[in-house]
Structures are given as structure tokens and as C-alpha cells.
Length: 442
Image (cartoon, rainbow, N blue to C red; front, side):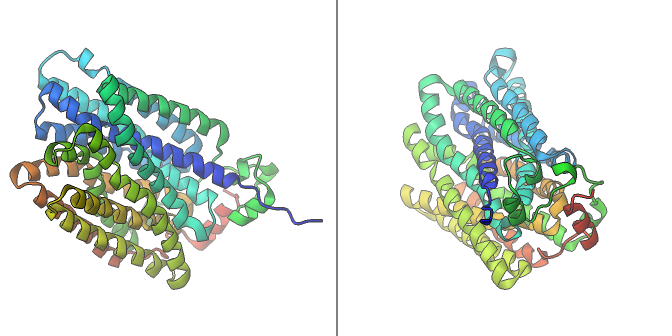
């Protein structure tokens, strides 16, 4: 009898997860593109706009841990579906804020900020639960490349967002961009709910050869009980490597939000690009992210195979974060528009090059509770993400863009240095517990 060939359901699942990340990127970036028009229409100052842009990140950060815990407790299939429907609803509500609030600009600014806060709360489920899917649907040797697909999806969304949304805004107005993003999220939520499962064991189309490849096992009657015992928060918070991981990712989270929020405005207001040219050039950082995230994930896995998890993950982070800091320093001082944009795009790309090692390390250190650990880590990153647009507005107004980018470079470099405290081979679950849960006994 011929040996059974593995099915490829894992790649279809990861492809849908990547589409979810594309949608979340559009939902996150649309205000950065529409912000110029909102700022002009309602005469918001840079500082006011900075708070509106930052509100998303505070909601995103606050709900990371609850959403990651929900993924561990109830499974990422249901959690992601609910989250997509939640944030798509608040994205569409952005089109009606000005119609409902007729008082002063102060009340209107708060209304915009509150809606964006709850949009961010819904999107908070995306990364922790997507990484939970990677933990279940990839082999140990592919965690870096699996995690990089999530970042590649964000990068791809960033490529399309400035081009697609700027054209839509020019033709139909800024409100249409939020309606478009909301409807796209609902469509993807339906696809995800109908096709996905929490684990390979639960999917009817997965054969035993693919399960063996993934290191998965069948539970009773071909089903797997997804629910686990309580998250071991004591072990998580007592680990030096966890503290290094989350503090370093705090630093990593600062710079991307400058690209998510202020970059399009920077291109049109500071560099003087037209809206159309700004849309095209605004995609440059996200092209770099899309290309370099999978490269970083692949290299991280190769480095782990060569040097072990501790030094393999660490080396990839050091390369990415040091190069990103240097590009930010150079880009902030470049005189030509093209050279400045390309250098800043490379800064974003190298940051994404480093990022898969963080997400893969969450799985390395806690495979069964990777949703909770990912949520904790991403909480810290998005606290920095909430600070970034507000502090950037203050630095730009007071000192100029060069200083703002210098600060981002310093924060990025610091994130790499903190990895001296991180050991990705430090599994915070006991070996016995891991084997027991992975066998489907809990």
C-alpha cells in the first residue's frame, strides 16, 4: 500500500489567518489615511489628532490579555469570529460620528477617539489568536515562518491601504473608507467561521499524515477537547525571559505605529506629496514589511536549527532592530524625498524582519498557553503604540521630525539590547504538563 501523503489544510488555514491580518491592517491604517481629511474638515490640531490616532492603540492594548486568554480557553475560531464582527461594527460607526455629535470640536474629538478605542478593543484578538493558530497548525521547526505570515499579512494590508483607501477617499469621501473596511472584515469573518477549526484534530479534511507532520494526535472519537486548565500566570510572571520578552516588545511596538498613523500625513504635509503620490509612496514601508517579515521568520528558524532557540531567536532580533534604528537615523536626515522614504521604508522592513522571533518565542516558551502569553506581550507593544502617535505629535511640534525619528531609533535599538535577558528555550510549562496536554488528555 502506498504511503499516505499529507493533506495541505494547514496552509489553507494559515492563508485565511493571513487574510484576517490584512483586514486588521486596513482597519488600523484607514484613520491614518483619512486623518488628513478629518483634520481639515473639523480643524483638529496635531495634538488632538494624535490622541484620536492613539485611542485605537489603548483599546488594542487593554484587551490583548483578555482576548488571548479567550483564545486559550474557548479556541481561536470563535474568538476571532466574534472579534472581527465587533471591530467591523465600530469601523462602520466612524462614518456616523459627525452626524450624531453636533456640539463643539472637543466633544467630536472625544467621540472619534471613543469609537477608535472600541475598534482597537475588537482588533486586540487578532495577533494572540492568530499566533495560537500558528502554534497548533505548524510544526516546531516552522514556528518562525508561521508567525511571519501574520506580519506579512499586516504588511500586505499596508501595501493596499494607502493606494486603495486614498483613491476611494478622493472619489467618495473619507467616510466610505471606513464602510469598505468594515464590510471586508464581515466577509472574512464568515469565511473563517465556516472553514476553520481550533486544532488540526478537529478538521474533517485533515488526514493522519498531516497530523503526524504537525506532531498532533487524535483525541477520543477523533475529537479534541480544546479547553485547558487555568493559565499559569504565576509561572509566566516569575520568568526572567518573559519579562525580557514583553519589555523588549514594548520597545518594538513604538516605531510601527508611526507608520500606521502619521506616515501618510508626513508624506503629504511635510514632504509635499499629492494625495495620489502619497498613497503610492505610503505603501513603501509595508512592501518592505511584507518582504522582510517572512525572510526574518525563515532565518529565525534556520538560526534556531543551527545555534539553538536561545541564540537563534536572539540573533535575528539583533540584526533587525539594529538595522531598523540605523535606517531611522539616516531617513530622518535625508534631504531628498525618495531617499528619505526608502530609508524609512527599510526601517519598517527590518523591524518586521525581527518581529517573528518574538511571536515564535511565545510558542517556544508556552506552546499550550501561547494565546495568553502573546496577548500579554502584545499588550506592552500596544501601550507603546498608543504613546507613539501622541509623543510623535509633541516632538514634531516642538523639535521637528528629525528628533521624532531619532527617538524612535533609540527605542528600537533598546528593544534589541533587552533581548540579552531573553532565552526562548525557557519553557515555562513543565515537561509533564506539556506532554499531557499535547496528548489531548486535558
